[in-house]
Image 1 (spheres, helix red, strand yellow):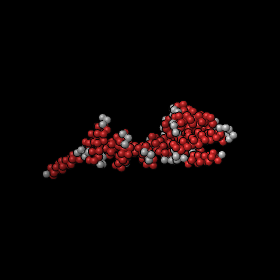
Image 2 (cartoon, helix red, strand yellow):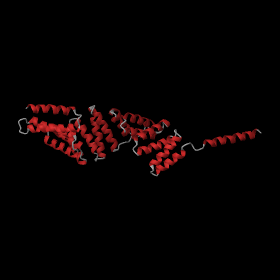
Image 3 (cartoon, one colour):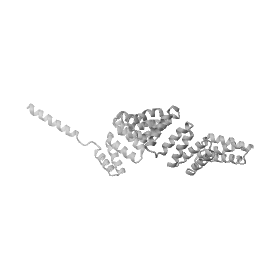
Image 4 (spheres, one colour):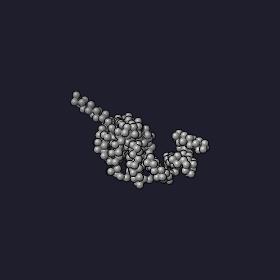
Amino acid sequence: MARNTWMLILVAGAMVLAGCTQRPSGIKAYVNGRLAAEHGHTAQAIAELSKAIARNPQMALAYQARADLYRKSHHLNKAADDYQHVTQLDPYNFHSFFELGRIYQQLQKFEQSISAYQHALQLQPSNTHVAMNLAVAYAQAGHPFRGILYGKRAVDGGRKDFAALANLGAIYAQAAAKDAAYRAKAINYLKQSLELQPHQPRVYLNLAEVYLKAGEFTDAGRVLRTSMKLAPSALASERLGYCYYKLHNLHSAKRAYLEALTLKPNYFPALNGLGVVSMTQSIEHPDSMHAGRLSAQAIKYWKASLKANPNQPLIQKLVKRFSQHSSSQ
C-alpha cells in the first residue's frame, strides 16, 4: 500500500515538471521576429519582437534582437534604450554593453560610452577591440591621458593594425597638445600606421598637426603636400597655407589659401589666412603703391570670413582696428 502511494507521488511530480516546460509567453512572436529579420523584413521583425516584449517584458533576447535591428537601421536612440534594457536584465551580456558603448559614441555621449565599454571590458578583459574603443572614447571626452592607457593595452595585446596604430597616434597627439613629452610617441605611432597603410589622408593631417604645434613647419608642409596628393581638401590646403606663412613664403601661402577656397567656397579659416597674408604684405611695404589696396583687401577677406562665421571675436577686432587705421590715413 505504501509502495502504491509512492508511485502516485512520482507521477504527480512528473506532471508538475511537464507543466514547467510549456512555451514561455512571447516565444512564438520572438521566433517569428527572428525569422522575419533573417529574410530582411526589418519592419515586420521589429513588430513581432515588440509583441514578444509586450507579452514578456523580461525577455532579454527579444530586446537584444530588436536593438540590433534598430542599430542597423540607424535608429540609435531606440537601439540604446533596448540595449540598456538587456544590460539590466542580463548584467553579463557582453554584446549589449559593447554595442551600447558604440552607439553612445556615435551619439557623442562619451561619458556614457565610457561606462558601457568599461562594463564590456570587465566581462572580456583581453578584448582589444573594446580596449581601443574605450581609448578613443576617453580621448573624445577630453581625457587623452586615460585614453593612452587603454590604447596601449590594445596595441600591446595584439591590435597592431593600421587603424589601431592611427588611433593611438591621434590620442598621443591630443596629449602632446597638453604635454610636449608625448609628441615623439604621437609621431612614432602615426608613422607606423602609414607604413602599414600609406593611403590615409586623415593620418597625414594628424601628423602635420603635431609638427605644426611643435613649430616644425618644414616637416608639416612636406606631410601636408602628401595629404593633398592623396585627397585634396580645404583643411589640408589651409594648413599648408599656414605653413608657408610661418616660413614667410607669402606668395605660396596665398596660393594655398586660394586653393582651399576653390575646394570649399567661403571656408572661413582660408579667408582669415588670406586676410593675414594681405595685411602682412601691406605692413611690410608701407611705401608701396599697393599697400593701401592690400590693406583694403585684407579687411574684405576678414569681413567675408565673419559673414561665413560671425562668432570670431579676434577677426572682429582686426576688422575694427585696421578699418579705423585706414580711415585715419
